[in-house]
Length: 252
Image (tube, rainbow, N blue to C red; front, side):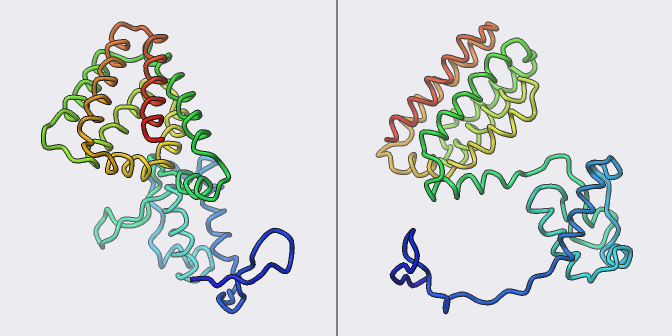
């Protein structure tokens, strides 16, 4: 735990320097990260392609294996590569097409630090999902509608727990964004949702009977799905805004 002392400059208390350890700056791993990113951007590395094994790769780059591991760790945390352990043909670092964005973690920290308000997050989510519903209504296929129905059916399982219910809730909204045929909008929506994930779980756990609220959520989801079935984007958009607003208002 950091100890605080009276501020010596404007702005607030300052952490005692005795609590901090000195660091050694090294730039080698940053150069490795940059080389890999550049090759992805110019098309020389594509999704599913494996990077060389650690020993050969470090020799080609002229860096230590420790620096290479650090670079790969950073790229993996950013969702750019997937490091598969083992000694078989499927092991090693692979360029991934399903990047896991770290932006949600950053946004969650900024929310905790007061850089954004909770209302900012909710309003951003409503804007993204409203547009997604408008567009999905004219693009979603019958197969897509059936997938949404399957998700809602799974949410109605009598023995479902809070975390599984929330996972399916995320999947329902994410699929609608997917059916809007805009991958960037879907990614932004997942980032925003990730930033408030723990608060949503806490909100459910704080309820005397979370299943009562869950029944309301399921009914609202069914209404949204019905509007999509009718190809009524405006109605679906209005319903999803009310759905998000009601949930977070009940949390306040």
